[in-house]
Length: 88
Image (cartoon, rainbow, N blue to C red):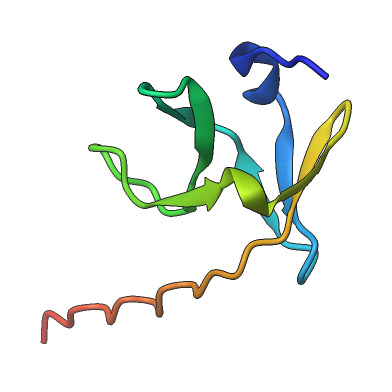
């Protein structure tokens, strides 16, 4: 099966471990020496003006690429929420 990077960016990533919707593929990491895809990146949730966090999902963790979604078996630990600073 052949797939374009542009086609991957339109697919939502679902984690089969817990059914979590991780988001849409943002980028693909390629090993330029051998020309192989090594990972995909998905935005990590929070908003940041300069990019923010992202999930880097190894290519080996991808279970299936469907028409609309990409199923991954990815073990990640979400960061604990930051404590809010109190003004008073």
